[in-house]
Amino acid sequence: MAWMFCACWFLVTGLIWFTWQQKLRKSASCQQEPPSLPVLPVIGSLLSLQSPFPPHVLFTQLQKKYGHTYSLMMGNHSVIIVNRYVEAKEVLLKKGKTFAGRPRTVTTDVLTRDGKDIAFGDYSAAWRFHRKIVHGALCMFGQGSASIEKIICAEAQSLCSILCETATLDVSPELTRAVTNVVCSLCFSSSYSRGDPEFESMLLYSQGIVDTVAKDSLVDIFPWLQIFPNAELRKLKHCVSIRDKLLQKKYDEHQADYSDHVQRDLLDALLRAKRNAENNNTADISAESVGLSDDHLLMTVGDIFGAGVETTTTVLKWAIIYLIHNPQVQRRIQEELDSKIGGHRTPQLSDRGSLPYLEATIREVLRIRPVAPLLIPHVALTDTRVGDFFVRKGTRVVINLWSLHHDEKEWMNPECFEPGRFLNSEGTSLNIPSSSYLPFGAGVRVCLGEALAKMELFLFLSWILQRFTLSVAEGHSMPCLEGKFGVVLQPVKYKMNARPRAGWEKHKGSPC
Ligand code: PLO
Image 1 (cartoon, protein in one colour):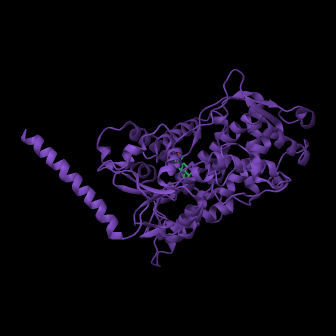
Image 2 (image 1 turned 120 degrees about the horizontal axis):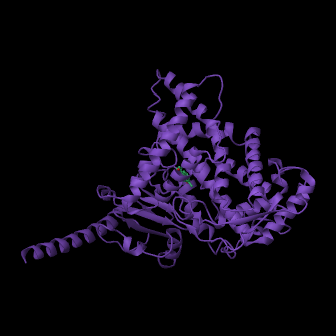
Image 3 (image 1 turned 90 degrees about the horizontal axis):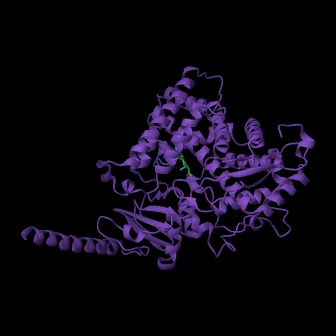
């Protein structure tokens, strides 16, 4: 009896203390804080987040009750959800540096050796230096480089040959291989052929990581849960260890035959930056202090490799799904390809300006199914404001890109797939009809691979649609339009049919 009394007493005083603390916090700031979802001690707002819908959809719906900017508690972390572009741009662009922090979570720490990468690493001088180097290296080997176009086209050619051989297939592994080979050439000057066991193992570990990392699982909200057996965390650690072995192997090979005189790829460029920093040790910047330790380099290459593969493959899969659902869009792209390129040569990057409908379709795919619908959470590095609301230092800020891209005030029928919305009324030139569109994020943490991704999307889709008409595989249902929520919004597996277009064989004498 006595212990029950004690427990009740603790519970009641605990609750009173908690409510009082919350009130104190609010009144101390004397500032208007965003409306908040109900908060309970320990679990925070978890009960209000129970929903059959994925988080980005739930956060969009919650606006009706709490307004476009509201707050909630994830365990003991305060989180602000931003659903409108005005505030999103304030966070990402106007106050980009103030909001450039990243939260540390259990799963991202496992993936990145405690944030020693660029995507999940916290903001610091070392981070800025590191990012600058990667940006420079990507510029050198990526955008604008004729060789990257050649590499993408070679992969597009080999993908088309496979589509010819096997008309009906789950295209996902082949798309992934094509995209992986582009990133592999860029990072490591290597590529995978069909059935390569290293590639098969990469497919498995990468999916394992996407399934388990950075999706606000309980262990990320309550880190103390790590002390209990946790199957997801075990799977993540296993997949990360396989990935790390692969990265380490590439790293060792590159170090073994590194030369100051030739820069074969991005890893060489990073190694050179590291060596330069080491040689400059007389100055007060050491390789370690500027964030170029072996760990940092490995994790950054892991970022570029992981992001380069998972994001572009995901967009290509969504593009194919929407083309299957909208054969009229597919026909119009093909008409454009026929009239602007014809059947005597294959598409190239310089055709981008003359294929506005295809470009508009790519933009629409990125709008309707953004790769990362909640981006990666930001953290306020000082006390600041979003709109009229006060934001305390350390608050996490989630930009709900899904809300921005489906905002009815900004987009007519946002649920409809309508590439024409990105064209002028004559359909001849491209535009961006609303500011509520940020598929690659914005500001200090904007996606580093945007230019490369756009080149790949354009070339792969134009090559495929010049030769094939895509439809649902016979006997299968239409591919699902709902995504599987995770660090990237992946489509559910589907089977498609690729039918060579009439007349293609006549003109070409190529594999089809
Ligand atoms: C994808 C699985 C890989 O094995 C590891 C990896 C590294 C970088 C991550 C990427 C994953 C998912 C997409 C991310 C990217 C960094 C930036 C990108 C999160 C987890 C996005 C969309 O922001």
